[in-house]
Image (tube, rainbow, N blue to C red; front, side, top):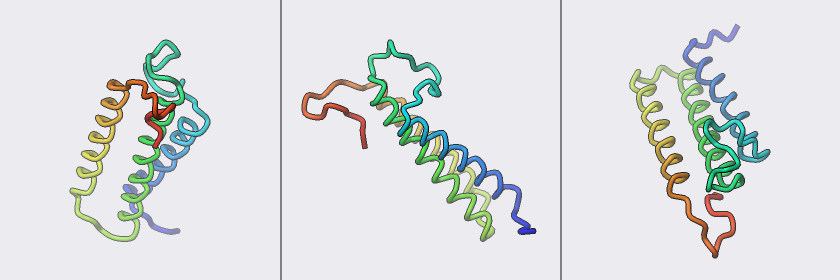
Length: 113
């Protein structure tokens, strides 16, 4: 048995789940996974999928990194707090980008990164 700490298993599991959901949102455009989004939104489906999918993918990668850090070392307990702060800031960025969306003539699909 590997003997991984439970917090490492939790972060790696959550990261893997978020990567799978981020892939479905970003590349398969499963926008029905986004709470409160529907086709009547002023933000086009492809833009919402791109912005939200990228956010979920970034958080998933960060969770895998934190899980890996807990698996191979004994980082300070503040690492979980820093991770939570990064998630809050990334979600705030997502909400801001979707609420301030305006079509751009130069770029037909703004929000794609």
